[in-house]
Image (cartoon, rainbow, N blue to C red; front, side, top):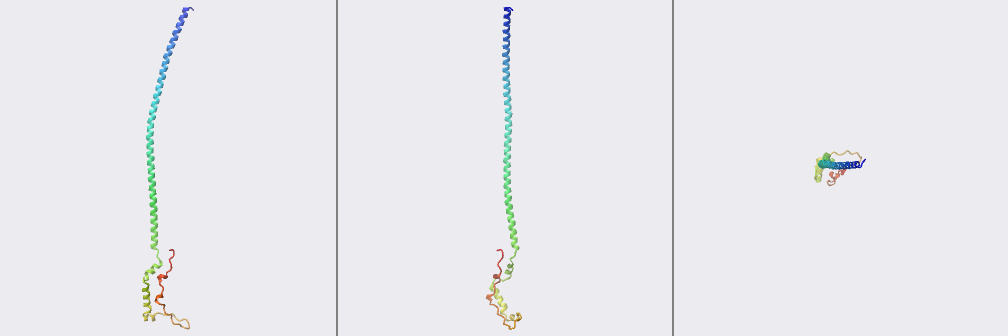
Length: 182
């Protein structure tokens, strides 16, 4: 090869090299533009995803508030129910105590004191009772004769003993036995 051919070859190779360099620059620019575009697309996608997440977070917050309201209402209802149950239990106890008292009162009315009838029969004034007894049995001579005497069962008959004085007669109200259980 000649020098001239060599030069041509060299120039040609330089041109080819420049051509490759130019293509590299263009292609690098294209690569650089596409990577910028890809980054922008990624950023836009992230921003849109963040907006969607923010919308869902707002909905979740609303639901959490609603849940808290429901829980508060539930607690209020439970507290009211507990208060009503307590009032009902208290009322039940009071009603039961009242019924028990009524039963005891009815039993007390039905239960008679055996001596209460005796007290109602006997006059209240013991002095008056004694005086009436003495007058009825010892002041009227006809009644003395009509009072039957027990038959004499002994060989040496004694005269009947005189009745005790009026002041010695026992008071039936004072002689009654003590009541049991009081």
